[in-house]
Image 1 (cartoon, rainbow, N blue to C red):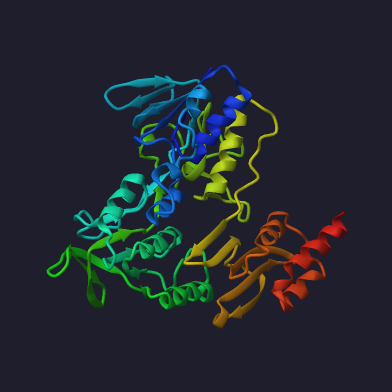
Image 2 (cartoon, rainbow, N blue to C red):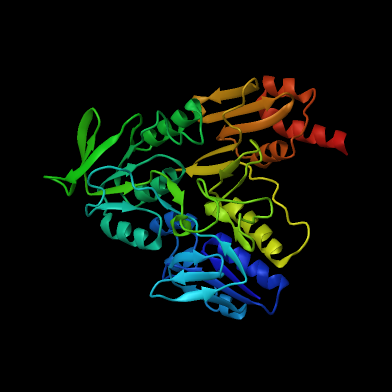
Length: 416
């Protein structure tokens, strides 16, 4: 048996290790198209902050890890797939056969349709190569524009500030992290950043990037004065890497459609991680959940099903985001925006940067948003994921949302 995994990020690595754990003899090939050992993109901001060296981003720290597990780590680029012949087409007219295949190709940064995005000084922050370029260009006092204040942008933000950048954040939405936070929460994060000396422009759109006169770049904004910049970092979202599947029978929408065993529409081909579009726990729809915990869960379930082990079935991804923005911890879970006909409760203390919002359907907690509340984050996720019936605890939480731990203990004592 030859197992092949396309993609050497967290999903690919965990899947390869899971395969080897249960199958000591079959061939396993892990294909990554970057020259470095498999690494975590989530560690790149810590590299830019100079908290770690490049090897600190590596998913496995020992140099012979993959060799010891007899996992063939192949650095190459996949350009196509022949599902009938079970062959992978690589660059330079090379092919590789497989018996079972896992696609874990992750995602890539979206390039906005803006004039000038190909100019020197415009960077993304997605790969180690990107990080090296940014680190080489940022000097203390450098004028940097960060385009996008979503989840990825807010992770990068701290690294740019800690390298001494004079930072301006430009976000098209009306608040920071608009796909993770409601208006109160997103604007609380915005005020926190402004208090830290960052210029934040929300409801603002970049129209063009041009060569500057007094600076390398001039960032033109809709209805506002242009911003001089030494560097523009684009963080306007990501898309799954599925272009190489264009001429195959593998069904795709935003990502690769998978069933609850992580199998695609083609037998013996599975998908995991940011590229996979599977069951959303809260909505019952097929969505892409591009977060590392989901990728890790996908990988283990996919590997077990590739091996034919019983009971490996995906229960659905819980929308979960936890963010540290210059020391302010925020999180959102499940249907944080609420559901039609549902109830909500909240406590809001803007002076102390604290916010807690709970969303209900009947007596079940379906979503939550927090800022500055870190002690009961696991409880919120547990109540949502277990679909716990709160019964008489719902009105109590509507009066005081901070009593979630009491609600958890009370409802689980009843269940016991």
